Length: 297
Image (tube, rainbow, N blue to C red; front, side, top):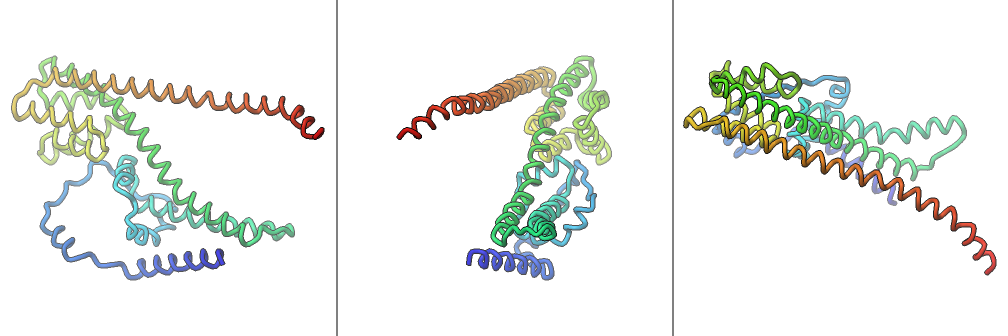
């Protein structure tokens, strides 16, 4: 009965996904009016493009997964950091889930050639577990890669603040200090900063506005705070050199604290294999004596 229920639920979900793909739901009237009344949002600074055969293979499953509300806001921000389209991510999740669901069937076909069998219950359970793992693995990988990129961007931002502060001390203006300092650096972070500054120059907007937009897209509050400080310097004439030096120092202190915390966590994890080895050694010593005692009872 359990297998029948599981198969019935899976069939119902598949039929519902097919119906949503064939007849997508219409948006509500309130959403259409709100979209027409709101001001258009600026084009994103972070570029993304859809590539790979997985995105093409799983494209029919993108609309049903979007109807379920996937991905979440936080995961969508991580995808923006990686420059990966949401449709490509959802297609990858669907393809991996289907591959995990069909893997026990393929294993059963190979075992049938050798005269063996897994059993229908084992196939169903293994297929559901592998499908769930394939559905979740892209999310975990995306969060891990996005966290690494954000950490690297914060390291580059601290160096960028030092360069801007030194350029301002040399008598340069705010705009020229931002552009000259960004032109010196290399890497992923400096490339995005240069793209934001070029966007400001081409659209004739202030550089702190595009830097604030970049900080919101990357979910890096330090960059948004830098944009706010630059805005005060550009509009109110506030002195910015001392503020930038303080921000760079605070950012490096925070990074050192995070590095120490990660090192301590790695040290604690290193103690777990030693403890497991010690417990195994105790069991290896105590087993003969315990077996002899139980044999004499």
